[in-house]
Structure formats: C-alpha cells, structure tokens
Image (tube, rainbow, N blue to C red; front, side, top):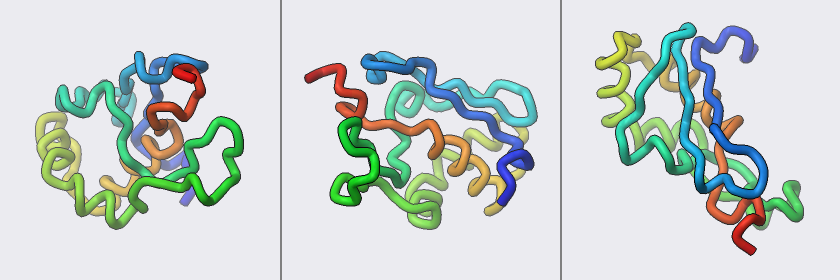
Length: 114
C-alpha cells in the first residue's frame, strides 16, 4: 500500500529520551481525531522491534500484527470512528493501524529511563 493514500496521520508528540511523557496527535483527512483517554498517552501495542540498542534484533519484536491488532482493538476504534464520522470499514482500520505503527513505541524503547 502506498502511504501517501493513507487518510490518517499519526505522530507521537515526543521524540528522544522521554517518549513516556508524550501523547498521540492523530488526524483523519486533516481533521483532528481524539482518542479515548486510556489510549491517548500509551503505546498502541502494534508490531515492531522496540529496542534502542539494536532495532534490528528480532528477539525484541513485540506487539500485534495488523489483523490481530484490529480484532483486539475494534470496539474502541469503532467508537472513535463513529464519533469522528469516519467510515467503519476494514480498510479504514488498516489505515489507522499503519499510521500509528510507524510512530509506535514502548516504555524503555528510547533508553531514557536507564
């Protein structure tokens, strides 16, 4: 899929060694999307290697792949989509996953707490 066709933009507000102090800034077609409070300042649990020392080491891979993540998170995500008039479709949920996956993080993945 071409990322330029993704209607979602996701950015974690903090970079560097204090990732745990950030929050999600997400938009759909340029309009802000407000996440539920329990998701605003937490990692999204998407698949990736979240190791600042060796980001290629498969031993540190964690999180859910796209299909499993959508199944696990469909309820709250559908509520967000309804609230923001976003179509509740599989492809739209895939777009959301792909946007947040590129910016996802884990506690300790930046090394700031070491």
